[in-house]
Image 1: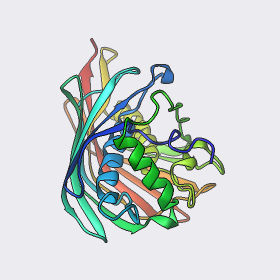
Image 2: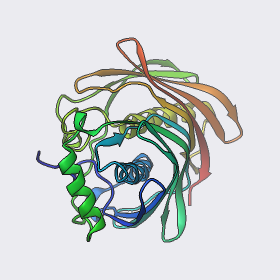
Image 3: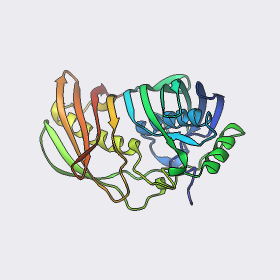
Image 4: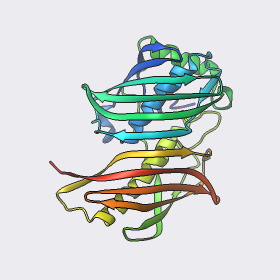
Length: 280
């Protein structure tokens, strides 16, 4: 499939691997992408964890995103920079994995993931196991070609209604076809959870701006996301109803509830802490 291992794969090489225990890797953001959102850095860490788990079962099973206890956003990565990635697997069984991980740029922490749990499902439902084995071999032997990634289009989100500073309801329309489906996943395309979260955080930042009345000299950023639960796959052409609600507010910070539904069914929930940081 055109774009495979380039459309939504954010790992260039695995620099060390203890199957089922820990792994280290790197990803260099291509210089021309414009911006690499923090949610994609979290995706990079998750992909490294997936390879560490798949290496224990000859890529016969693969983990999928399920629960993320906490994601701390500590900084951003600029185009052209190399991200050093690390994961530690707390457990790795044929039915599920649990792990934590982090990302650094030039030894400066930019992201931490803790208390992540994902089910291990038959890999053949999502991709060809022989292709996964070839990708894993490439990552460990010299690495994938640099600069192959192209920007992922922003999710198509339209605000439906809301109450200023209190809540926003919007619709995200999943495309029927998109380059990222080449990696996520070739045999069963679904909307990546990282793109759903990215869209939710865009709305959370808007709501927090209304809630906090941030001054022009301050920049609102997501500081952390907690208790994320991905409950169901979101297929192509789905219409996702997103709702963000202000749960708490304090000086320079707001906590926002995140919810997503498809056809009236809950597909994802979580919380985000948005803070105001002084612009430099």
